[in-house]
Figure 1 (cartoon, one colour):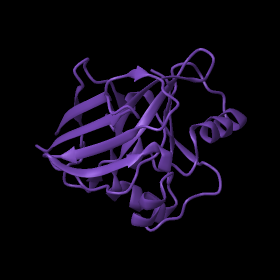
Figure 2 (tube, one colour; figure 1 turned 45 degrees about the vertical axis):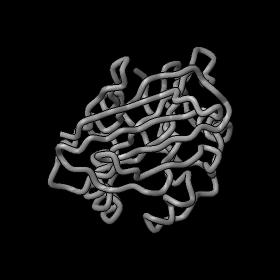
Figure 3 (tube, one colour; figure 1 turned 45 degrees about the horizontal axis):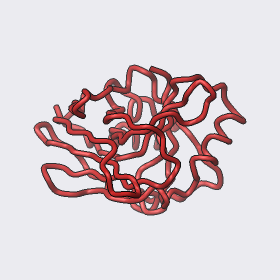
Length: 199
């Protein structure tokens, strides 16, 4: 698996709920390959909280994988698991975010589907209660913008994953929670699914 390139504050609602602002161009943090966990063919996975006594949020996202020509090849729903306790400390101290955003098992992936350039609908529930739901058409920076910036600044590789940001509604998870996430295309078909136990 390649590196994860994760954009932040790419939905205005989420930027507002974390008391931040959207950025004038897409800004990224890295997720190491060890952070990302593939689902089974049925979409089963695990959310590893690692430090369950700390504040750890779910962030549902559309994720796409780059093909040999460095354009989107596949897409899935994913959960960018964020240790808000560690991230907040890092922001306050001016430290890197890696403990908050790139820890082992923090990038939880659903089932893969062929790339569809049209907007898709993503959503997430905890124990059956919907927490996040939005269209990727609400993204501040489009997929084209994300790729243009990445290619201008970095050397991408086939197999790299691009995490496209999360809509509003993030909230903490606890051990034993069942987290489900999904992606629907414009025709209403569920093209990616994810069901995970928090532990």
